[in-house]
Image (tube, rainbow, N blue to C red; front, side, top):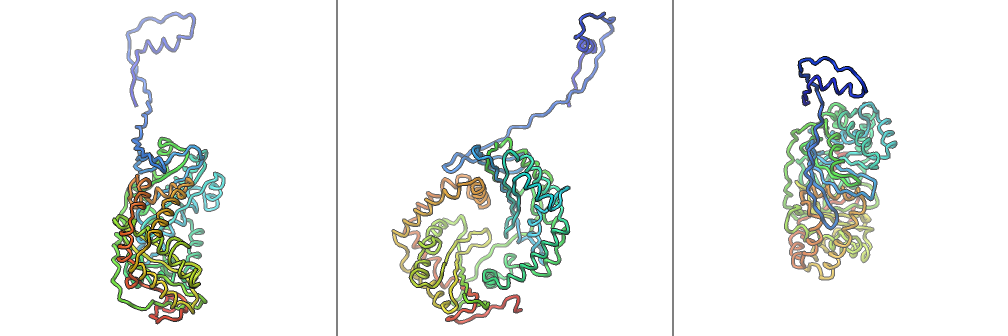
Length: 479
């Protein structure tokens, strides 16, 4: 507020200036009158750093409210795709309350402010928008998509979800019922049983190995979920990526409105790193499950994302088992031997756990042959490596297919969020293909010798496999 002063005589003259004739009043001694005039502070200009790359021009800025944003402005498509992520996820659930973070993310679009669950969903339909949240071991995330014409109203609704979530008993009871159903059906899920056997064998005491139970789900309450939300979704751990027909100056106030009521910070329990144990040569662990096929999964040590050999392993994985019908495991075990419809391998480079593994299904009768076939292919990689032709094919596919990950606003926003979460640098998209091309045959064969020795791998077979010795693993149902 600024005070402006005017001589009283000037004010009187101004108010009467529209009259053609008047008798001037007697001249009085001049007095000073103070008039309050409200002034509007202009917002400080955003400090926007622009990275112009081959795949996208990324604008990087921090909103006045403190949110760190990467934005790709795309004026030709009238859709705004928005991703938000916070470090901290399911691993932060207190012991005995497993499932608490899932309860938080489930309810973020189940009612807020004056809108109950049905009202919130109806409002999203009216605005032709989507908004949902999810969680992994280490991250809690929300994503939204909206027409840019409706962006203001859509962001108002999202802001209400963060400022005043309801966690009503009706949706919460539905969440509990769905979780209880999931607890029962997972005991006949080969994938879940294989994961459980793997985690119990390799890192049984780590938060990653904890699972929901009937007791933990029953102990969850709306009040606990709301408290957990305020721990997970805080301003100082927030990352934002966005793509759409919007400028930084237009987006920044909308983001600040969304996060206005979030806590500044919180403390979450630390997640320890996992060091995989050295495995002694052993027969596969068998989890008994009456079904005509056996799921076979295998897990060994992997590489950190910033390891100099990561891209070498990434290229090798394409030829190993990540390249679909072009991979050796698929060619040998499906096409040549007819043991499976499909087999895959992948690298997992998490912050606290790095693995290299894969899996596939086969008939119970051929489970032993299937596992031996996998090991034989791994040993061939160790002894003989890959060929020049295989390496060239892998590089051509991995570089040529890369632009397909940028063919929509949502995909670009997601790609940027992955880069941010893994701290790869804003120029990663421009460097990525060059790092693939730089991998040499010597590097690939060296990494194959180091990482594909089958003796380093834990094999799990879920089903009623034949042809292998059985090291039994009890399921929760059997316990």
